[in-house]
Image 1 (cartoon, rainbow, N blue to C red):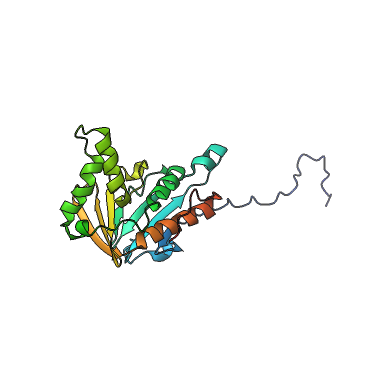
Image 2 (image 1 turned 90 degrees about the horizontal axis):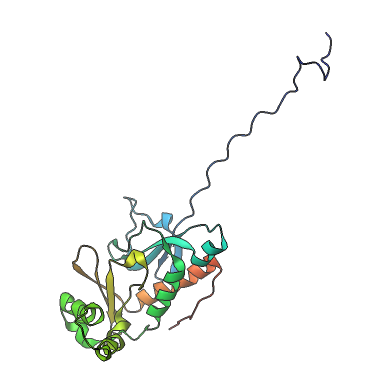
Length: 226
């Protein structure tokens, strides 16, 4: 048998088999902040694939930025969970975490300052409207009255203002030494109420901001600690 020569057109060198295609990258897990403890969302799913907290939680999912602009705005998804699996926010829509960070720092400015015995004693609907109307209803009131309403009632707001995925929700927190009364209204236009441990909402929001900054490399704008 004559060995093939390199110049023989009938001979072709054996090529290694093609490499199998790389599997698609696994999706980045959501983060769930529950009572100040960051956990993977997948580990907290119930039997029906739905997370049901026993208190208050933040779930968020960060995108992967591909530019300096993306790292500045850092897009992602976020929602709040309340007792029994109630969701606040459009959890499937993308928003900017930069705006979220600044807005929640404003919420935490009022940590420990949401006590009001009178509002705690009102029925849920009346308590909600007593806060919502002065802050959100335009009656043509003078600027002095608007500023006085903000001074008196802004401390109860616990929804991040200016974050589009929460535009259809309003939520207020009224506390005493032991309990927190969480009132909210969403697209269904019904007023809902849940009683939580005093301080837990601020603890979770504070832990969320810490976790967000660790994930993005940002610094806290204005840390608030009890």
